Length: 153
Image (cartoon, rainbow, N blue to C red; front, side, top):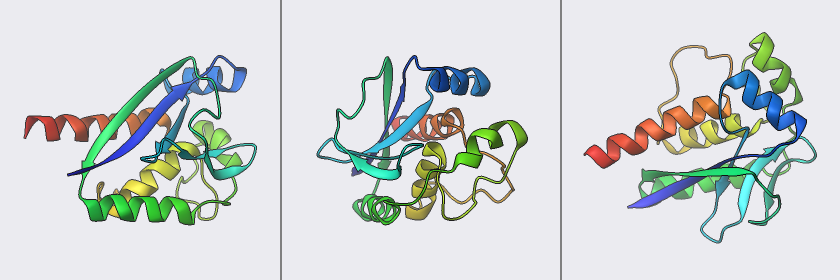
């Protein structure tokens, strides 16, 4: 069995504080963590990038491990690597308030990227209804529920 590792984090800066307040979550950002500790995620400054494990200092962190097959892990990581260089979805911050479609192609917000990777590898089935946003809280709830189901099985 393989694992997808997502790291939910936060800091005390004003943007992080606003995201946490607006989404009712303890975490404001999520990265996918590679086996070597490096992270792939979307940031406002430079879009989707692969960054070193210690690229930022966080005030809180929660790692969620999602069980998967080796093929699913390879597919998720191939999807994420293919997104490197994609711009940050700046409309997504406003979208949290105005409910824009999170599936806008060509741009990613951190939790949109994580959910898309889970869909791309088949760990999460594509949601059959139009969900207008995927916040860090939404992704955390989905992945935590999946991990608990696996533990119970």
